Amino acid sequence: MLKPEIQNLVDAGKMLPLMEAFYTIQGEGYHKGTAAYFIRVGGCDVGCHWCDVKESWDAKLHPPTSIETIVDKAAEFSDTIVVTGGEPLMWDMNPLTSLLKQKALKTHIETSGAYPLTGDWDWICLSPKKRKLPNLEVYSKANELKVIVYNKDDFKFAEEQAEKVAQDCILYLQPEWSVREKVTPYIVEYVMKHTKWKISLQTHKYLNIP
Image (cartoon, rainbow, N blue to C red; front, side, top):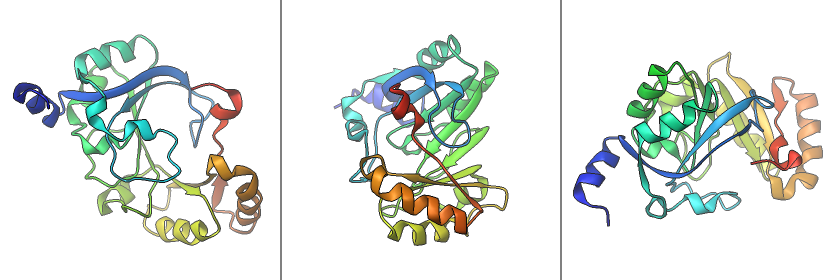
């Protein structure tokens, strides 16, 4: 149980349950291969059974950290900052992105879109989940749509989601890591027949980096 004064700061987005922060190479989607500093915020109730960071789900496990501390550290490493989770939009992202912008840092977010969009973002990667669909607002603002493919049924879901984003949104299909050998051939075949889609791979896992 957080002290009331700490809880108030968390509720206002001035402190965030920080799970981890690290400098690495972006592994997925449009910016793959780019050096970036990742801020992983705890808390998620979307509950994907194949999630590879289930330890992020319970926000109470991750200490509330001031956004000043988070941003000062981020600025030491990179001009590209990726906020991920968990589900970062469970928290008010406006204070964090305001501080990042003050330091002239580029702000990227990876989100399921399940919560209202807050924050000032240079790049929004929307990765929708069937269990808790995105808010309507985020569809029009997403720069890339990344749909995780666990089985063939996910292609239908991907097309439903693609109908909702803007025309210039980049469309990606990404194999779920634990079944990648099975589903990658399906994705290759699908993309060759439906050329508006691109393939995203979790290249950081192949490179054995965070």
